[in-house]
Image 1 (spheres, rainbow, N blue to C red):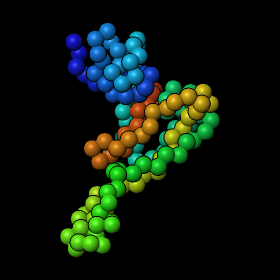
Image 2: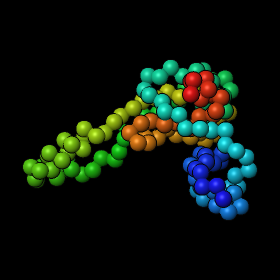
Image 3: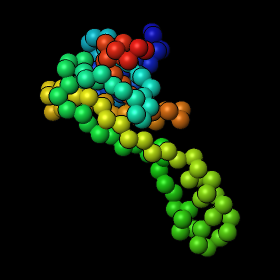
Length: 137
């Protein structure tokens, strides 16, 4: 049994398939090898005018805004305790906000596309292998 993470072509989750090659996230059978791979994308990166999901010519650019982490209730607590003010400052220094515009074709715009995510302090996007090659990766 192969224990490598693969990308489910149905729900875009990175999973270790269950027996019978079934995705544990969406319960669909993974029939084919995924044509998607993870690519790091930085804000302001020039992206080719091809759909990042299927590599067809893009018709729209979808804007994504990402935050690195959930905010906690330290702001309210800071009013009550001086140590919470220090912790709140440290918490804010660890947060990131990134805006990306990813190209999509008309068909993928209507369907469900994979969302960018933070992984190990970087933004990664599931893209089609040919799109990744266009980026030089």
